[in-house]
Image (cartoon, rainbow, N blue to C red):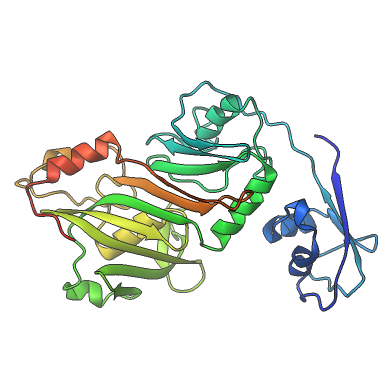
Length: 341
């Protein structure tokens, strides 16, 4: 590990009562320290006020001298692997990749290799933003192993902080294409009576709930109404496919498994979803029923990703075509209904 970088500054007038908020307000912009990262550094004892180690409950006043010891990058033990990448954009600060289904984003127990991070470390010769920690260099957000589609990865710390701030503010455009059981219909009284469900102009269905870990299965998420984290998904039907539908979903928040959980909550779980899809099967007479029964992953693709470049300020927007397996499933299901919209 390299030596710490020391960031020293003085608190201005009328600081917020919370220590992390006060420091986040006054820390120099060039330090690229988000409030969430500052909170971690405070918890690690890396923040001092007037020479004394600070705690989250401390209150600051105008003129207090704050020093933050920002740790240098940690050498990662993750192996660089020569895994092919589909790159849509790359510059000095970030890269946008189109992740295939089946690839884990970062190493974890059970998936120590073959991940997107392994591939990126090879592509960049080990140089990625270290803000995410040694196990997740450069990773600002992620999609599930068996979800395909677009991800932005930070190459510089400035890009990492800028992108993280946009995700925290829910200003990043993220649109997904999915294939689900049944057809979400505005005329369905069951949906209209479901808590947290509303309809907006253009037959857009909005789902507003809270999400938390399932009480008995810690690998799953579940809808709840107290505790958990606020979650909002919007969706509309792109095409009716008999006993299934092609839908577009977009996220206001980005919680773990959010689309999959919300679609299951609506009674329209994703085709192929082994966790939230239940035992539901297509009617045998449905065109493509055999394809649907044998589909080996949740039918979910991160199609669109739009954000402001965190360094240049340019607006960026990328679109990924539907992958071959989902396109084949969609085509197999066609004939059971007509396009809408």
